[in-house]
Structures are given as C-alpha cells and as structure tokens.
Amino acid sequence: MIDVVLVELKIPENIGFIARVMKNFGFRNLVLYNCNVGRVSLITASHARDLIENARIIDSLEDYLGEKSLVIGTTGIRSRNVGSYIRKTVTPEELRKIMRSNAAILFGREDFGLFDEELRLCNVVVSIPTSEEYPVMNVSHAAAVILYELSKTEPERGDWATQRDVDVLVDYFDQLMHEVWYPRHRIQKSRVLLKRAFGRAGMSKYEMNHIAGIIRKTVLYIKHLKEEHGAK
Image (tube, rainbow, N blue to C red; front, top):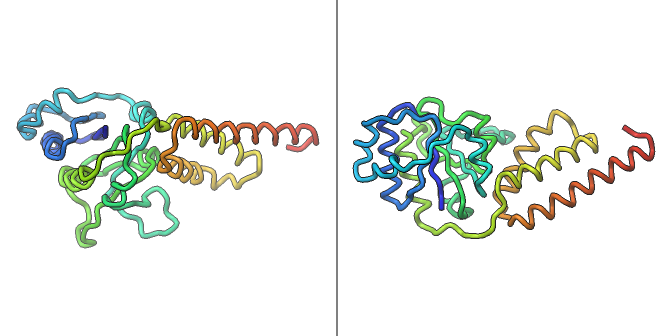
C-alpha cells in the first residue's frame, strides 16, 4: 500500500480535491499532518469523503516516516545546479519504476511546498516536467498527475527495510566517516545521499542489517587500532 501524506495544507478545499483524486486512481490511505481540514474539505471530496473521515492524523512526521520502506517527496522547484542534492529530482514515470509497498508520498504546503529539512527525510524527490514560464502546479493537480502515473503498476511487495533500518545504517557510516577523518563539512550531504541511495535500493531488513553489522565491526576495529597505537 502507498500512503498519501499531506503536510500542513492550509486550504481545506485542496484536501478534498486530493482525496477525490486518490479515489479516482485507487489510493485509499490518506495521512494528514497539521492540515486545515474543514467542512468544505468533505464537500470538495464528494464521494471520497470517507478517505478524509478515516484519515490517519499524525503529530510527528519523522516518527511516522520511520515505519515506511520508501519515502517520496514532491517539489515544483527543480535545481539547475548539478551539485545540488536536496532537490535532485526524478519524473513521475521514473518514480513508478522503483515503487514498492509500504511507501509514503508527501505533498507540501500550497505556498512553500516541502521544506528542505523535510526533503532530507525522503529517499527520492519527484517533480513534474512543466513549462519554465510557470513551473509550479496546484498541489491537487500535481497529486493527480503523480497518482495517475503510479496507478499504472502494482507496487512490489516484500519484507523491505524501513527508514529506521536505513537510519541505523547511515548512523554507522557517520561514525565511520568520523573515524577516517572524512571532511566534516561533507558529512551532512553524505548522510542525505546515503539515505537516498539505500532507501531507493529496495533492500530487505536482513540485507540492511547485515551491511550495518559489517560497518559497525569496521568502526570498532578502527577504534581498536587507534587505541592500540595511541592515535586520535
């Protein structure tokens, strides 16, 4: 199953429109984070009002995403800088090819979209190719385009590693980077890139934990050698 997560939407009508689009394309799991839901949301949802009435309400985005095997962010702002890593995007068609079960796709605020700190929590960021003259779509229209594309295929099922599993592995890599004098100013970027790479890889819990065990042992061995030789 794929969760559609709305992040701090301010316009109640948009929540209803997105619920309607979800039902159009066979998506039923709606998650709301600090959204302005009102009576008009149910009106604009029409026959999809049950998705709003049964929506999961969360108060911590990071805790909720920890349960997921794949986290997808959305943005209307595509970076032209090849060195940019926060808003490095794929198209909806490219996203469809890596979809799997227990995933969540985030749609952000009508005015600011998803903030950089929220995009850092994502394994992949999707953007719809639009005219450079007016690239940013209404959030409900963007949801329609992306969900239509994702409805073309059934997400692959499996015992996927969750974001918590990925974060444990990335933390071990963080320790490794510190132990081998990796440039400190590059660590944050490397953490994001590792989280995205491992998140997109579609590894099982067993595979993820096995790699984490190898990195953990490597870190312990390096620390042992440093203590043995009096190095810092």
